[in-house]
Image 1 (cartoon, rainbow, N blue to C red):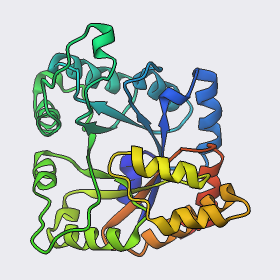
Image 2 (cartoon, rainbow, N blue to C red):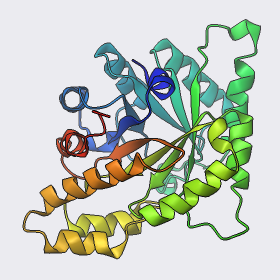
Image 3 (cartoon, rainbow, N blue to C red):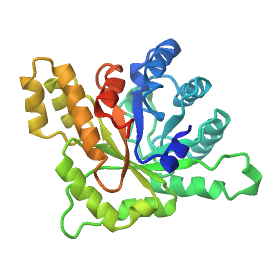
Length: 290
């Protein structure tokens, strides 16, 4: 079953996100895939400024091993011609779901002698994909499930998600939210999202991670854009006799709570620790049994 199909047929989907910069070769990637395949509906392939295997090559490997890939496509430092070619290559490799990201300037550009730029902003790229699907001359492209990203915030009384509304109007059909370990904020945020009726247009996926230590939790909070990791979570990890196991339990508890929040369609689990902690957290949560 694909990610697209899972969103239609399941009350709560589970994906995991692999950082390809941490996967040295195809063999290592496939070992991780074998560990994750029984537990998740899809594997998200993140892109970064570091040198790593192409996400499209990785997607083809995943598809060959019966795992549905969700490819992250960054608009930074890519012309619209290059992005168009990436879409064609993705279709040829069996990709049906993509997450469109703005991206950021490559920190190594000065060393590489390259010029940065944003030829096609994320909002325009989402609309561009939808327009391509209407073009009879390129009918071989599938109807991609297109996603957009957003940060979870504790909304002010007059807050409206204006940019997110624009992305959904442009054609985004799922929204990948940044990591949020603060469920009070998550509830407030999703209540406002539901009130705007955006959940009628797109599925909203929360992000979590089994944090293996208090140090990693602090790094996560300070370095992962938009991540909300409250101090009580860090204190709980600090006091634990087995922080790695405690991180799995925390993640499992939060996942279970997410199933009770109106408008949340699933969770995406990031991998700051051992990949084996992902299926362990999913099993402990019981979300695959509901």
